[in-house]
Length: 266
Ligand SMILES: NC(=O)c1ccc[n+]([C@@H]2O[C@H](COP(=O)([O-])OP(=O)(O)OC[C@H]3O[C@@H](n4cnc5c(N)ncnc54)[C@H](O)[C@@H]3O)[C@@H](O)[C@H]2O)c1
Image (tube, rainbow, N blue to C red; front, side, top):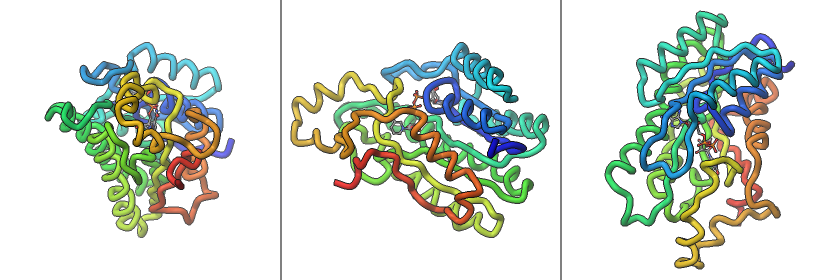
C-alpha cells in the first residue's frame, strides 16, 4: 500500500497501459481520477478505448478495493479536462501523481502524412500532454508537491521511420518534461518521462510496418530490442512509473527513463 492516501490522475485509462497504471495504483492504495476519449479517431488504425473499456477499468479498480472517478474526456479539451480533475480532487481531497499517458499513433511513409494526421497527432500527443499537466499542476502545488510522469517512447530519443508525427510529438515531450521540471523545482513537483519500446497493446501492433520494412530492410534494426523480447508488457511500464511517482524517487526529476529492453543503446 505504498500509495495509500495519494491520488493519481491517469489519461487514456480505458485500456492497455492506462488501465494497468490505474489498477496497480489502486492496489497500492491510491484513489484514481481517470479519463479516456472513448471514441475512435478515424485515421487511427487500431481500436482505441471505448465506454465499455473505461467501465472495465472502473470494475477492475473496484475489484481491488479502490476508488475511481472516471469520465469520458478528450485531452485536447482543456476546459473539460480541468472540470474532470477538479471534480476528482473535490471528491478525493487532493492530487499527488499524474500519468500523462493518452496518445494516438499512425504508421505511414512521409508522403502519406496528411495535414490532418500531423495536426491531430501533435494536438493529442503534445498539446494533450501539456493540457494534462496544466490542469493538474495547481492541485499538485496545493498538495505540497507531487510527481508527473509523461509517457514518451523510444521515439522520444531516436528517430523511428514511418512514425514522423508521433516521433515529433514524443521528442517534444522531452523539452516539456525538462522545462517543467526546472520551473516546478521550487514547488516540489517532479517531472519525468518513461520511454517504452514496443508494448503488447493495440497501439503496439502495427499491421503496415512489416510491409514497409520489407521495402526498407535497412531500417529494420531500429525496431529491434537488445534483450530477446519483441514487445514488453504494460506492467513493465507501470513498474517504472510507480518508481518515478514514489518517494523513493524523491530526487529524480527531469529524466527520461527507458523501459526499452535496450532498444536505444545500439
Ligand atoms: N504500445 C506501444 O508499443 C508503445 C510504445 C511506446 C510508447 N507508447 C506510449 O504508451 C502510452 C500508452 O499507449 P498504449 O500502448 O496503452 O496505447 P492504447 O492505444 O492501447 O491506449 C491509449 C489510450 O489513450 C486513449 N486516448 C487517445 N487519444 C485520447 C484523447 N485525445 N483523449 C483521451 N484519451 C485518449 C485511447 O482511447 C486509449 O484508450 C502512449 O503514450 C503511447 O504513445 C506505446
